Structure formats: structure tokens, C-alpha cells
Image (cartoon, rainbow, N blue to C red; front, side, top):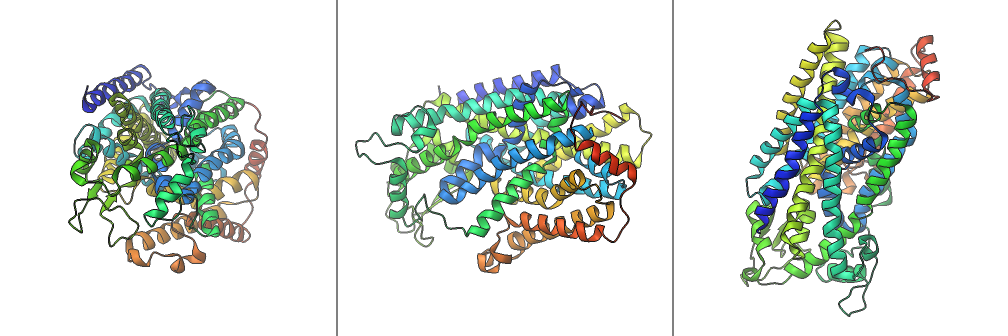
Length: 566
């Protein structure tokens, strides 16, 4: 069968599964809508957390980044993996013991202030909308190639699917849908990786193939060959780095602490019955995440090797069908500058004739390697699963920030549970429409957009959460000042260098201390900490009951029911 036929079959089956689960697990109360009733098994929650966390950036774009950046792309691996460990060990149990639905709920109650709660809501919306833009774009890329529709139409189709199971099922529907989505995405990620690893190196495990010898009789290691191919074309050696040490540190740190401040991941730890279960599910999630993350560098190297050997200095008219199909999406383009009919893929922008969107590397990899059509279609289904699972989690955060933290806690405290649920669904519907617009008019390629979201989370949420847990004397004035300062600084820096300044001027010599926009969230976080601690000294300490509460959550014993007091 043709790739498109296989894609319709596999994507259709997976979408039917997601919708069926949403119907089965639809939410009937705010507790089910917000935290899936608080009774999810740790293994199921670990699977759902892994799917929630491994977004289109992880599935589609991370390997693409590493494929083009080589060694420099390792910051994404280190940052996101380290960030999850930080979240699971340092924050999740304490927030779970506190027993609130959302991060703004924690901020508002811990800092005894509706102003702090509102600032946290604004931060949550900024982070979530920035992050969800990357997911919707990923959906559009997959649809445009494999279902041969316009990218914008692909985004709209994705919006409709997410609308159905996120608005209907809430966290309960999303949780069990994400369990299925994890199974789909990890299978889709591993199958082509295993195929290509065997093709190139004879190793079944891609992780072993990554450092293995080629079976072409040359006796060369895969990475040695890739270094040679890159250098022949004028690119830096694949295994060498070009970023400064401080920028690598700041980007990695921003991704780490940004992960720990991401509201849609934190809320997952509220869906299990006990604090102990939160820790256990965090451990399971890390194992499930590691399967994909240890495979991504191998896929990046395989894809880069196959791409260069397939297209470089080849006759354009003799290119295989996959090249033409991707050209139709506009995500790969050939301009014959010297009219010789051959593709010159080189580092020199003046003579380079091939433009490639980084986000296509994982999706195009099976086609470049000439794998069976069902494998190509499976990767499309996996990319959709990764993007939709995270998009749903983010949209729920946006929904609950509006319905619970803004309306229930501030504007209409006497609202009924039914009324709050209606507002949650309305907010989710509006959020999906806005997210779709971000997907149609994206501010950058998927992983870059997500990196900005992590930077914003690092600069706004993380210090307020850490100080709220470990410094009982931190008051509302300090926390509010820190969050506002960190968010405004980081957002301004990103907007200036990415959207205002001429791209040619976006160079290390013009950055503060050589820190790129992707890493500035770490600097914003430090500013947040400093401002919070300084401002706090000029205002009274928190009330005694708040200080006692902080003492209590420092010892995460007991269940801490997520719905207590609601």
C-alpha cells in the first residue's frame, strides 16, 4: 500500500482510540476535570507524564536540532532530562503535599495574595501559550506531508481532535488518552531507529549503533564518517561544539529549571492518591522518558548521514519520491544557483542550494532510509501523538488557570461546581482557538519555541516555587516583585533579539555576557531570586499560619488530598 493509505489507516485507528478513551473517561466533576479524580495508578500516571512531557519538540524537533547542531544540540538532551529529575525529586512531592490543583493556586495560597495568584496566572498563560504554539505547528507539519494537506489545515484538524478529548474529558480523559499516546509515540520512535541502526551498523539497539562501526566494509565508526561528511561540505565537525561554555551552561540550566516550573507537568503529580505515589510515578516517567531520550542522538546521526549521502551532489531529477513530497510542503527547497542540475548542499550560504527545515528530520528519516511504507506512516502517527498529548496538557493548564484561579478564586468565589466546570470548558475551547492561531503563525521552529517557553517558566515560576517551599519567611511582596521582574526581563530579551533586532545582529557579541535568547531564562531566574530576597526584607514576614504551612509541606508525609478545601 501507498504511504498515504497506510497513514490514513494508522492515524485513523489511533485517533479513534483517543476519542474512544475520551468518551469512556469523560469528566463529571471539577475534581475529575482538574486532577482525574486523584486516583490514577502510578504506572499509568508515569506513562501519562512521559507523554505529557515528551512533546513535539522531543519527538519531532530534538533529533532534528541535534542532527544539524551536532554536539551543540546536546544542551537540549541534558537540560530536559536533568530538569525532569529536578522536578520529580525537588518539587513534586512538596507541591503534592500542599494539595492544590494548580501552580497559581499554590502561589496564591502560599503568598496569601490574589495579586500573586493573578501574576502566576499571567505567567502560566504566557508559558503555556508559547509552548503550545510549538505543538500545534508540529501537528501541521505531520499533516501537511503525510495526509498531503496544507500545514494550516493540518493545524485546524489537530485543534478539532484536541478540542474533543480535552474539553470533554478534562484531566481524566487526557490522562488515559496520554497513556495510549505514549505507547504509540515510543513504538513509532523506536521501530525506525532499530531498522536504520541495523541497516548502517548491524546493531539492534540504536544506542549501540550510535557508537558502532559501519557495515559498509570501510571499518569506520558512524560518528567518524559523519564528521568527515560534515567537514567536506564546510560544516563544523559533527562531534565538535561551537557554543561558548557559559551559553551552554545557561541554556542547559534554563531548560532544567524551566522543566521544573512547567505547570502542565507539575499538575500530573496531583492525579495520584498519595505523595508516595507521586514519587513512584515520577520514577516510572523518568524510565519511560529515557527510552526516547537515549535514542534521539542515534536517530539524529542516522538521519544526518543518510541525508548527506542521499542529496549532496546528486542529480535533482533523479531524487527519490520522498524529496518531491517534502518539497510540496515547502519544508525542503532546492534552488539551482549554478544551473548544473545537481544539488549543492554546503555550509556557504552563497553557494548552498538546499534549504531544509530542521523539524522534518525525524519524520523524513524512514523515507530517506527507504524503510517500508507502514513504518513511515507509523512515525506520522507517533509525531501526532507526541504533539497532541502535550497540547492537551497545556490547554488544561490554561483552562484551569482561568476557571479555577481567576474565576473561582477571585471573580466568583460562590460559583457552583457545575458553573466552574462550564467555565473550564469554555476557557479550554478559547485556548484551543488561540493555540491554533499560534500554530498557523508560529514565532519559530518547534524546539526553539519550546526553549523560549522553558526560559519563561524558569524566570517566573521556579524561584517563587522554590522560595515558597524552602524559605518560610518569603513574603508576598518579594515573590510578586521577583516574578514580574523575571518574566518582563526574559520576555523583553527574547522579543528584542528574535523579533526586533536585525537577525544579523543577533550574535554573541551583542548578548548580555554572551548569553543567547534560548538561555536568558537562567539569567532571568537569577534576577527573580535577587529581587525577591531584597524586596522581601523591606516588608513584614508572612503570617504565622503561612509559615506553619510551609513547615508542614517540607515533610511530605500523607496524602494531601488534591481537592481539599475545594
